[in-house]
Amino acid sequence: MKHWALNKEESGIAVAVLDKQGESANSLSAEVLAEFSEILDCLALYPPKGLIIRSGKDAGFIAGADIQEFTQLDTPEKGRALVERGWTLFNRLAAVPYPTLALVRGHCLGGGLELALACRYLLVVDEPGTKLALPEVMLGIFPGWGGMLRLPQRVGPSIALDMMLTGKSIDAKRAQKIGLADACVLPEEMAAKAYSLLLSGQRRRALPFMQRLLNGPLKFIAARAARQQVAKKARPEHYPAPYAIIELWAKHAGNALAAPAVVDRIISSPTARNLVRVYYLQERLKNFGKDSTFKASRVHVIGDGDIAAWCALRGLTVSLQDLSQDRLTQAIGDAGKFLEKKLRDPAALLAAKARLTPDLSGNAIADADVVIEAIAELLDAKQSLLQAIAPRMKPGALLVSNTASLHLEDLASVLPQPQRLVGIHFVKPVAMMPLVEVVETEVCDQQVLSATCAFVRQIDKLPLPLKSSPGLLVDAVLQAYLQEALRVEGEGVAPETVDAAMLAFGMPVGPFALIERMGRDHPLLQTLGTPKAEEVPADIAARLVKALVERTELLVADGIVADADLADAGVIFATGFAPFTGGPLHYSRTKSQ
Image (cartoon, rainbow, N blue to C red; front, side):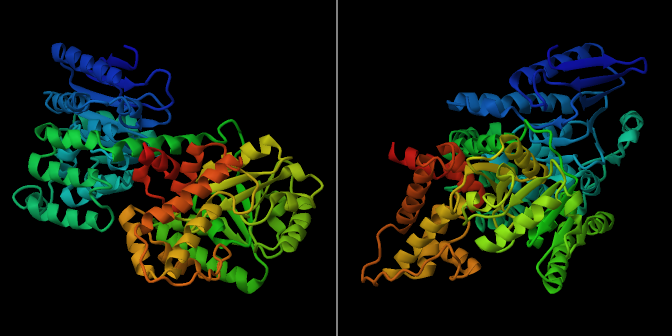
């Protein structure tokens, strides 16, 4: 076989190893599933004492279905065939007479988790990379290969619906705690435990009585509560998939083939196509910096406790410097509170706090792999600080300035090696926004730029390379959008009316709610003296989106961002612009067609 290896040991146990040819991660393409069907054919003729399914990849177990195949579903028949392929195969796996075990190490997502759920036992390895999830809803689709049936049976509908409707992942220890995994072991214990658990005859932990009721005669109660929660965050016309998941679980026992109209509606929806587009945009951002071998251990941050806290959370040793002892003490305290919210495990919390230390004099600059200057947006102050930092840094370390409103060339001009400076702009709030703008000057060293992108990926953010320009992409686009909102307000429209219009369009937060968070004295906003009018504008959302689109188009035309797709990615991941649209420029193009 091309992707699978099947070995039957002297003990009578069979081991099926998935190592998808030509790929760094396993995914369940039609070819991979066809070969797995052949394995089951073989084992039907020569039944083993048990079957262990594991990955041959270092990257993880299985990342899910082959996303590329989703882009080829141009007819309802193809969509139903895709669902039937996995549903039938995994039902067959669940029904084999011998015990089966999925050995999960690393990511186990989507169809990968559905395959694991079809096994009698699920063994997880306790290490940082082990994550389990059914994230199909984030692609605008549903887990149609048995996940909607088997996950509620294992963990109860309350937890299962939360996982399926949010797409959020859980780690190995949490998987064992909720009953998703039968055991959780360290890497050195996994082989022995896999064999012993497979042949143990151990029964699955029973669900609590109330969860059994909610998964049976009281399904309607759980479904109603789930719909109410979804309705608070997503409109069915924008995001139909979560509503379909609830319907398929509650009315059809998770069998999407029993509701072909639902399958056709979801798979052919513009939302699904656009969210798959957003997935590929995200993957493109993840590729920036892959050509660099740079990896940081120590980071020195000047002037921003949020950035320092995030780097500490991601496992780096961080020193934080500020302009005064009082400010530094406050920043360290705030960072500690942030880490407490993010880390439940006491040992992990203690370790993270230990990685973050105050450094008023900047003594740690000499040992840092990355030095991030993030003081106030004042040219003279930043220039003076960068001049003082550069001579103290070790060779090969990255010097980056967190700026959006200043010309990076002006900051680099005072340095003996201007090609060494790279701009880096963390979109606020740092913990919530996945995008980081990475800015180059005309003289920037391309290896340094690539290393900076690699660092951004190392701390689990998405790098977007840009040319130097005040406002960059995110602030420039937001400025156009928010100024148009202020103009509409000046024409006599109440701010709450404007916010309601944009929420109805699909934005995560209204412009005036955003303005209140930022403060009306924010540099992005300028007081507009537009006289009030008696008539309310006909289409508020169209005006605000038009202003945002036009500014985005201009930034692409000026070469600040390389192309329209990257511009769409930047606006989605930095402002939350309605992902179901596929991005502002994509939305504008498709709307006019």
